[in-house]
Image (spheres, rainbow, N blue to C red):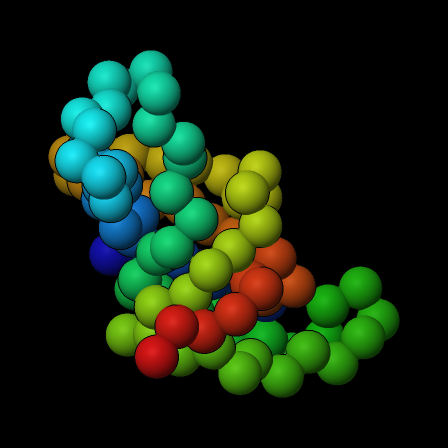
Length: 93
């Protein structure tokens, strides 16, 4: 199991849509990197670079994050991304 440190969040990518709303099928190269992900694990927060960080994102949340943020990793055959809490733009209800 991957356990994020400090203000980091482990995300599992949500699959991108294969077709547009009008029914056009997208090729792999035409798809954008998805920006919606499910939160798998959250670091403890605490003192990061001299600032007290409180974690307000929790495991199970679906979030939207900055497009080019984080570090992509592959672990046990699944794709994940690790981002800082400050890279989270919104929580999706």
